[in-house]
Length: 190
Image (cartoon, rainbow, N blue to C red; front, side, top):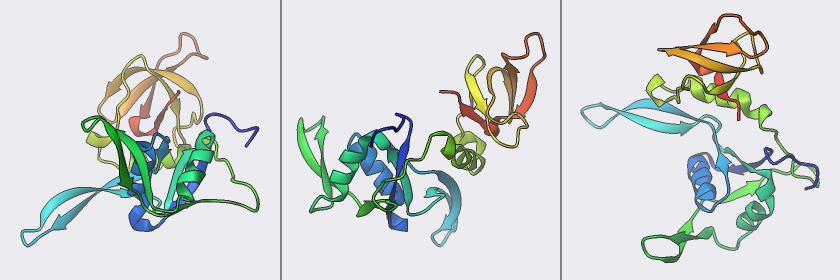
């Protein structure tokens, strides 16, 4: 596992129906995990009421921090699909269920995915959500521009936000005016 950055991810696979539950279970167990999601509006029941539902953009795939790979492997190879966590209300360790999963392997190694390689998935996730479900950055925050902006990968600072658009200023170009970009094409610079 040597040579990997703290921001790298490993790939975990599960059933389509278990994708969101797996990411949630890994996070609950103290392992940082993520899977890209979207919000879909479906009609249910006889009255055909509209209901928002979170769905995975890449069913069966989730990502866990690579530095947690030994813990992820231990959880994947556990004899029962459960894990233990501290319950604050009961003030004791409790068992919780999780979906079956495996860690993606190529030959004898577990490939690492860099944080930057996931940027396109993060942008797809932001694009697939209604604007009220998208985190809007505030003036003064440092952001990195995603693909489609013409400034892909550059770090800038938000100067103003208006609806679906943000005005950003690049530190490289002192004295130049702000540039208007789609707020959904912004990623955190952190």
